[in-house]
Image (cartoon, rainbow, N blue to C red):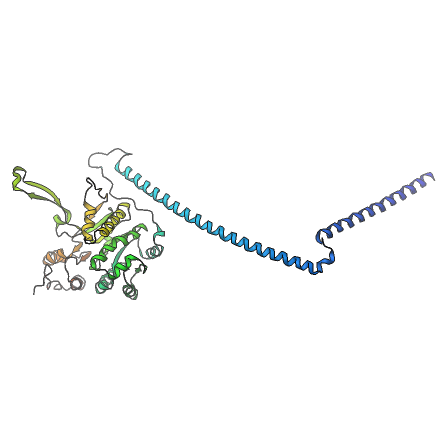
Length: 430
C-alpha cells in the first residue's frame, strides 16, 4: 500500500511539472512573436495600411533613386579615370616597346660586329648585311593595317602613288601587273577620281583622309611634288612592318619582281646607270696637269639609284632614310627628291655630319631596265632584245605614255618593230 501511494504522488508531481514547462514554453513563444512584430512593425501592425506608412515608403524610394543617381555619377567618373589610366599605360607601353626595340637592335648590331665571338679564318669574316626589322606598330594607322593584311603577300607589296593627272599611265601600269599575275599591289590614291577609277577596275586602293595635309598636296601638286610625298607615306607602311616595292606609274611590268629580289639590304634599288661601270661603280681618274707628278687623282663614281623604283625593308636605317629625305625636302622645296635620296644613302660621315648606316644593293640593270638602256642599247642588239626584263621604267623620256604602249607591243604582243619609231633620246627623228 505504501508503495502504491508513493507511485501516485510521483505521477502527480510529474504531471504538474509538464504543465509548468508547457506554460513557460507558451510564454516564451509569445514573447518571441511579440519581439518579431515589434521589429517588423515598429509603428504598429495596423500602421502598415496607414497613409503615414506609404509616405515613408515613397520617401525611401526617393532616397534610393537619388542614391542610385549618385552611384551612376561615381561610376561614370571612375570610368573616365580608368580610360585616362588606360591611355597612360598605352603610352608607357609604347615607350617601353621602343626602348626594347632599340636595345634589341643595338644588341644584334654588337653581336654581328663580333664583340661576343672571335674572328674566323681569313676570307670567312662578313659584316652585318641584313638589319633586323622593326616591331609592327598597328596603332599608327589601323585603317591601313587592315588593308595591308588583306593585300600583302609574306608582308611585302608593290605601292604606287597616283592622282588623276596620270590616269592613262596608271591603267597601263595595273593592267600589266594583273597580266603577270601579281596580286600584292596597292595604289595610294591622291584624289577621289583615282579612288573611284581604281575601285571600278578592281584595283586595291587606299585613300588618305581628306583633311590630311599630305593628301592635299597630292591632289594639287605636280609630278615632283607628288614624288616627294612618297617618303612621308612610306613611313607608315614600314612602321606597320611591311616591306615595300615602291613603284612609279611610268613602269611596265613584264615579270613578277618579287621573284628577283635578294632582300639582304635595307634598300634594293634599280639604277639610272646604263652599263656595268655606271650601274655598279668605277674608278674615275681626274687629270690635273698643274699638279705635275701627282696630276692623276683617283675618284669613285656610281650613277644614282632611281627613287622611282626601289625595295625597302622595315628596318630602323630604312625609316631613318625616309625621315632624312622628307625632312630635307621640307626645308629645301626646290631640291630634287632623287638627288636628296642618293645623298642621304651614300654620303659618308664626316666633320659635322653623320652618315646613314644602311645596307644598299643595286638591281641588275638588264632585269630592272631603265628606258635609256632599252632605247639606246637593248633594242639594237639581237641577243639582248630577245631577253625579257622584269620591268621597264620609262624614266629617261618625256613621252612616257607612247613609249609604255610601245614596250607592251614589243614584249607582250611580239611586234618587233614597235620600238623603232622612237629616237634614243627625247627628240623625235623621222
